[in-house]
Length: 365
Length: 135
Image (cartoon, rainbow over all chains, first blue to last red; front, side):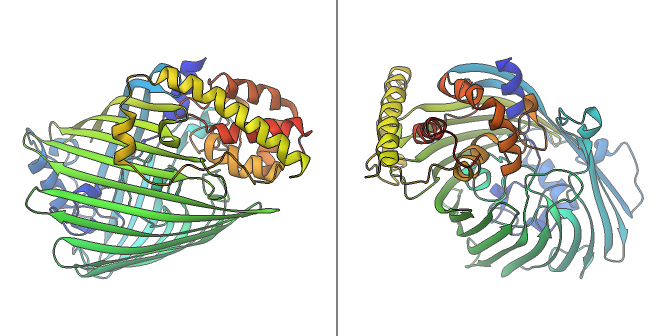
């Protein structure tokens, strides 16, 4: 029973392949340097495929199905599958093994217009049955001012995650889990995004999914504006507001990125305030996450991060800290192994401690 | 201090002490000093908890962020038939399952991926002991 619940709870805890912002500034300066989407994640560009090949221990043909399928120029296909197994500690240690992601991505278009759709499976709703396991997390139409280029104006409409904050593949990062961009944070919306080497701005208006249940229950907007300070640093301001029938939540924060060429380390940090208004109460939370990343030889990438989350500033002691260590090994252009670990301390270790150590395998089609 | 707050503070302190004893026993060998130095962030204070002991606070400030993530006990998945990500979903569960919810939290079966904060556990107990106001 417990194993089943662990399975279910963590089945998607890091389940959706998003961007690897660890590459930003260290190699490609914008998400669009490697991804079709102006917010990163999903299908890779030609350059992204080349980076996948060049970063791997044994780079092979990075194209869809290793290039076995010749696709017309107007069509792009991709996919991601992830599995994980390991140990989880919430005060008691237990084992866990589970599927995490199985998704196909497709994008078709020409002359700057495109339709992007992904489809896959997730854990079904236990009340509605197996049919709910099949879904499309993202589907949107996009117009790109400069087709094939990494810069310019992008306009999107459809179902996608409002662009906000650092967008790690690991959704368990405190700033994502508690900070307004957790797993399945997609909503229906429209965005206008401008991406350039000097700065980028993403403005999104959204409404919650009226058909399928989703994490986002509110309607609102999100804004992310990042300015590059030279070649190796960036500073961003971010905000998001969502109003649902039972609560209103406002998020605001600052993101910073700094690449240190000497030690070849990329630092990324995000600090957020969360203001939640419900009937009879208002609460303010504080979230911080700082991540240091270094690439090594043989396709190895190491992240070391610290996180802090104070759910309610009125309650002394209601906070937790985490130390995350992730070791990525890009064995081939398609195959990634990830050791992801967390040590979590409540009240600096005065409360219950927890954590996890999981081996994850990620195959990109 | 009002009697409700005194009751909450007493329960909060008691629950925290119980959890801390268990945690210290379980965490022997963990290099907490090094980690604490690394992540020196917010400071500790008293165990006082000024949050209102109401259903809305329990549902949206305690259970939703802890148990009601999309992949967990949410209206997306309804694991074990339970959902905590909205007021309506939590109300449905807590009307009949509040004791079961407390049990699995107290024995640390839930949440399985991360420890629940003792302050939140104490607030849950206080709310149930107060007759589940607002439900």
